Image (cartoon, rainbow, N blue to C red):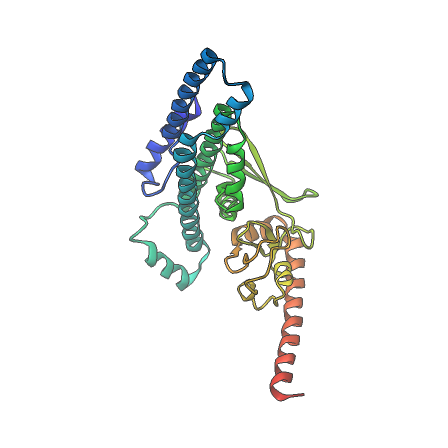
Length: 332
């Protein structure tokens, strides 16, 4: 079955069952735009052959920048990418908040969302969110590849780079890593049963470079490195900055020049990511609680060692902080 048919079937099924309020890539319509552009190109090719006035290089430049596609294609695709990323992030955040909260906090979260979101099994909703991200990501990649093929250009590839720079590439979202960890944790707690559904995520935490692997519906394999870029160890108590890079909490606090007990929200707005040097990435950092839970279960000894070290460092920093505060207030 071609991907267009698979995607259409997926949309029809999920609009009825789960994602009726979410945006999708208009794959079919965008493909028609490219087909119409291809017909125009064929007409121009035949007319130029008859006149014999245009050379091969001028035709290439003309097709590389197509006014029809630039107006109807990229502007619409950018809006769809933004809506899809926003929908995915909000739904994933809501699901994970409900799952990780305990006691009264969990009850309040449930009451807040019970009318907006009917009761669904956590694992099923998690799996469907993962499918939503994967199917739209593949649709986006395939339609951009078709654009480059029709126009003989690299504008589609450049558009993908622009999406990554503006954090609209759904496959780079830290929420996808969290959902993958949640799904693996759920399967492990149920004896490895995934309800007959193939789990697209796998983790290798004992390798020299610990990674999470995601296999997309078109068999493309993506790998996410789980090594902290500062301490060069497997991430502990991980946080994802808004640029998408993963760090241990203690390492990220050190890079932002704040103390561990203060947290990343206390970072200066001008603080930069240690990897990409993007500014203002700490205020909306995501605490990767499901990933931390997975590390705790699968690398328990390592996790305990890092926990003891972080607690000792937190106590040390707290003593220094309060000693300085006392000296400032008392004057000696």
